[in-house]
Length: 491
Image 1 (cartoon, one colour):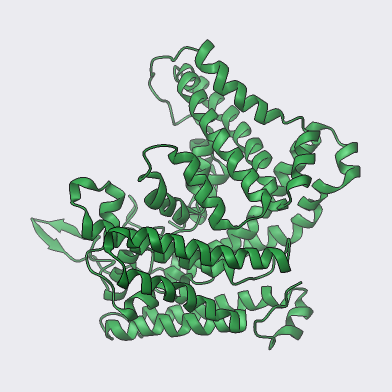
Image 2 (cartoon, rainbow, N blue to C red):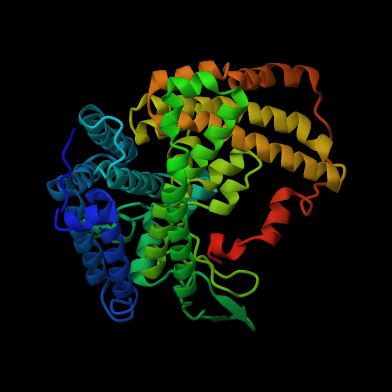
């Protein structure tokens, strides 16, 4: 068992609250980041200070928070981007991006394996969390730099165009971007152009209005409302997680008595509730991180139709869309949104063959080497292919009326969440054989169903002609109008 190397100053207070020291330090670090973010946005506003000072502020306090939470392990926070920086500035731009991806994944993988060997199955705070975010940053930067310096606009996709970088960053720009404190501990991943716009105060300039052919600068909106909404939401998620998860511990899936004494329906119910409650831990950390970024001025994304500012540009997760998803595609798009963009930018849009499978493989390697991860991602690939086939052949039959569309949405909502529980519990359980035993007890029913759908649906169900899409009667639309939309989205 590896020993936690972070600051022990609050160990006594942590034990008093019932939290582990690493968990308490994470909360303290994020609260400190929230306070520092206020200074970033006000005292160190771009109109009041130089870009060099803003770069240095984000870098220095990123290192301080890293050392507070991880002790001397924080050296890795500089080590991984440091090695990648050497590769970036010394190698040919045509191969540099691939080399940085290889080096960063190998570096991260070594630490994943170290943790897996010496602290197997632990959910404690670990240096690999921030390094996963840093890996996303340095690799996305080098791929964007490669695109900007080697491709014409006609050769780039729209995503690549928006993130293309045309000038190699300086030492200070690179490391301040890599170690920026608001997103260090829990993301979200910030792409380089968005970071530079933030540092130089250009984030709001992109959202201008025109009046009588004259460009009028939009007044900088206040993020306070979005911050308060997200903090309240984060605290609510924390309460749900702490109170309810002990009633549905996912490790019960390894208990022989549970496996032998429950029906397949009860197993599905337990996995669905258990994995849902586990997600609230991520919702807490990610939503709080979103609020910190908003507090320093990051994440402004224009205005909503009602004129209110939208602060969701670099959001980690769309809780509302995920929990009410009616398809795997919709759920995946709402979960860890920055990582989805990162994978699309680096893998999916660049592969001519096997793009989906390779995207899942890279995602699994980035997460680590627990067997449960690979069971989840490989199952995810199978179900993604099956869902595409079913949707193409069946969905249009339900588009002929509002009632049929509503029925389709209700059915797909239920199926999506049962499938999510079925394929993601190994991700939480981590173990291979324990997951296989559970699948055996469930007769691999959904895997078999997915394979049958891939084989039989195209053969026996002809594609229907597209009908008018009724969306107002869907379960998503109905629930959108009925519940806490503004709090979830932070609009």
